[in-house]
Length: 258
Image (tube, rainbow, N blue to C red):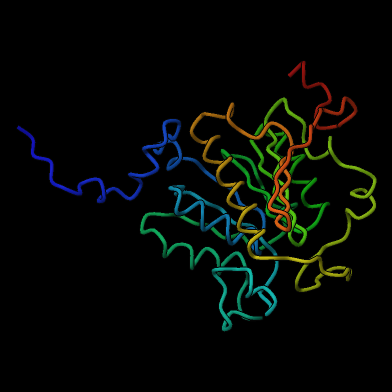
């Protein structure tokens, strides 16, 4: 007769997650995840990915660390300012959260990165041009893309699955007007005023992104956000706006014949 000791469940790192009916920890642990952006959203997303069981993570970011990052980025320290690249520091510090996680940093632009071969892509970027470029690449490869964005106390999450509306479909004239602006901390491109940012908002949006990635990795895309979810931390409200496929969107051209 097998003997079961008291508290044996506590020896399993993911025991509580396994109790969620749709959660497939084996598929989560074997999934390959790309995180584009290692700033405020990226820090939170990578932390949540590692703690949620993802074990193969690639992080892409081109910037170094500045003092204003420290209030919103859990993995950055004062000693990192102007001495470390965001992707490398996040990979180093996040690796300490789990002994078996494999995190690969890439210092460079997401536009210059091969995004093929991943099971899920998380967009944690700070400018529209890069987000639309990543969105197009994900659509081309048929890779699920979870886009996150914040502005002060507000944020949004959109899940782009094959056959659903993408970021290009929901882009408006304001997006087009500002798409070449980089809201970068280090100002490696043209200067534009920084947008407001709050650590609680980035934590909420990143958590939503990782939750959607867990659904996708578990084979439960049917549970994913089907439109665009908006979060307003000032009034503690969330609402969903419909997102329809734009028949003129280049990412969906000829989709029916593929």
